[in-house]
Image 1 (cartoon, helix red, strand yellow):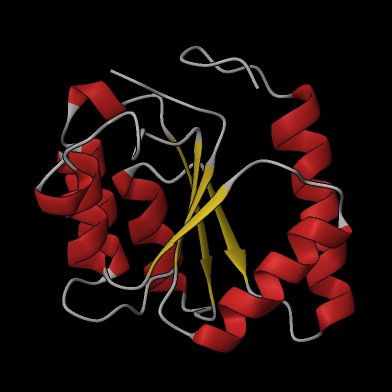
Image 2 (tube, helix red, strand yellow):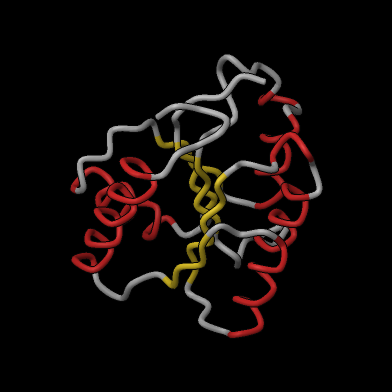
Length: 148
């Protein structure tokens, strides 16, 4: 399976996508960022279906940021789909959502999320989160599938 050190953001809110791109850039994260806007496209991407069939052009990312409130297929359904496949067992999935509901947190961790983060309310806090993400996930964490 072809993998890269890219980051996949699965998010349907254009404002949140803009803010996340800005925060990642501000934190000095240079990994390629791909964005998908709904849960079904995410599953198609991981399945290599349709436009995503070329793994050289659409490789499996090292890290996924997953919103829960997505059109067509919800984020928790995408997470369950990912974790049901052995080839994605070590894929890092960070739930990044506006939901602070304890049931969502419990279900996400129960389905195998590596982290659950509630979207910060300000751009400055999102930048701080991106810096912390870079520090932990990209500088100190060790991956068994890829080297970042």
